[in-house]
Image (cartoon, rainbow, N blue to C red):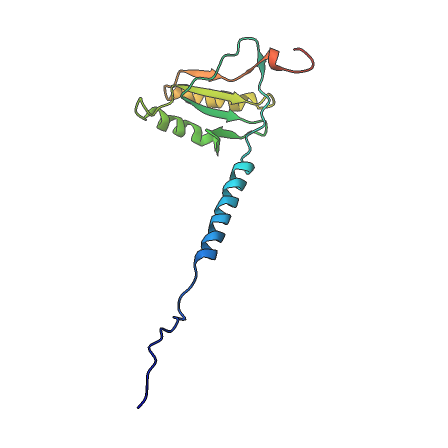
Length: 144
């Protein structure tokens, strides 16, 4: 008579997922660290004034750079789209809408681009405009 063994055989299809999970977590940590390190703001040289005040809490930031770019809350937009974006901001509910429009411009920014942004804001009815500057006392070196 033939005897069959009752021993359990190891399934060949079992895969140990622990090393793969470790690799995925390591990659996740790596990309999170790289994302935090690689964030870089704009390097603007704001004009100096003696009457600068602190920035309001809920504000929409529009920046005109020295190389003729317009940034709408950090994202580059075309000059033609500024008025539409401001109109969309104006149509938001009172709780979601920014209280003030903070206009920032590099010292070397073209004045015409700055005026276009101001004019667009006033056309859509946003009248609480703030122009960002730096206090003269913050400047190091020449004392101006």
